[in-house]
Length: 570
Image (cartoon, rainbow, N blue to C red; front, side, top):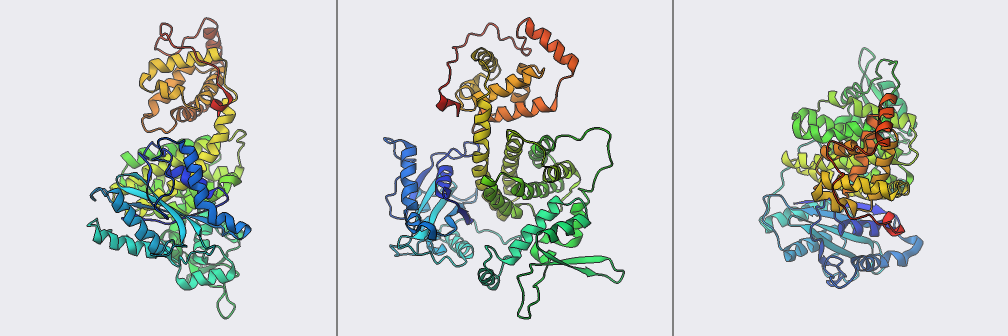
């Protein structure tokens, strides 16, 4: 059984978390989400209120969970939501709702969220998505206005999970594989509180060093970037004067003699020793100067990220592990280049996925050069991304890659890494929802004429009749028609481009099929720009009537599309 604690902050943290828990999930994986337990036993259930609007019930539930937090006003804690997914192993028996409810109560009691018999404890709910897991969400203010005594809740929850496995006859999780980063000690935690730090020095250093590794092109730049973030670096030199190792410290973190407390790279994380940092940097050294203009970093990074699932499925384990390392670096960079509104969620995703980027399998990084260099180019050059589609398409590709990473770890029985990837998915889902909405809305406002939309609809009904209805009814349909029309104006055959997008990957697991096609068409349109001669030929063809693809669409009747109301354009 795998529990993992996640903290969320911000005024809308509860709404975002509950919205995700009762949503459809990335690939419609949330089947029949409903409450199995709550702090009072009768909290409103958006999943089991057939006679009420689910959104209304969800708002009521959020308001009740948030009530103790709102009572504190400005004195409320920074982190207001405690979220703990709890997943059983695939070979475990299917537990009943009552059994999951008992497990949830034991978890919140162990964590200090709701100790047994404490009627003034925090408010919490447990939501079941499927046979094998629940999500527990709690607000971090007790009903008497005090903070919960959580202590080291992650360790306590893990101990409770081990006991639950015994009591319910579930699979006993194996020991870690030794690739996890060393956790801060209790002494380090207390020291961080005294220094006013949000995290222990060990965690702060690991984050800053990882970001520098992801952003640097060579060893000299790596050390410069680390020092630029306020980290003190001390090299361990050999007899020849060459650096054999490196240690890192924060200037304000000192011992009783007033000297900085240094941590070696290998004690921050197994992949942050100087030899391993050098091995990683070898894949990002600058390429020879080319006469051809450089590719668009957004497009290049997205294309490289889209290849990660293929490597995870078809390549050897060493190559797959290399892809996970590069994916972790991508998240490290995105978390500092993202729009401010979603930066915190991406930082949490990067922090979680750090554990999923390592295993006992040696990483082959040769196939990751394009991804690592293109992500670095985004960080360095800050390429134009006027309507936000570049960032959103890359984030969409990253989200899909992390989902495949979770599955890869599951098939290799990497329990800790699988749980870390699942944590990252939660934060990525929240970030993606916030990033995609304004972009899709903006594209939808550029939707073409009704006649052109009708033409695209006819083609869809012939190409994918089993998906056409869901695509045409998708709120992102206007955005899809906008990118098709823009591609056609640039000289593309819109029908052929749409066929290519449909052939790339099944839409069966797409939460929003029209949105998925929008990104695919946009990428294909940018990747294969037609020549001026091809554009002229396309213009002559258009003058004679729409040719479309090899499929004929002229004889297919279709109900006329109606103008959309403003609410459907969102």
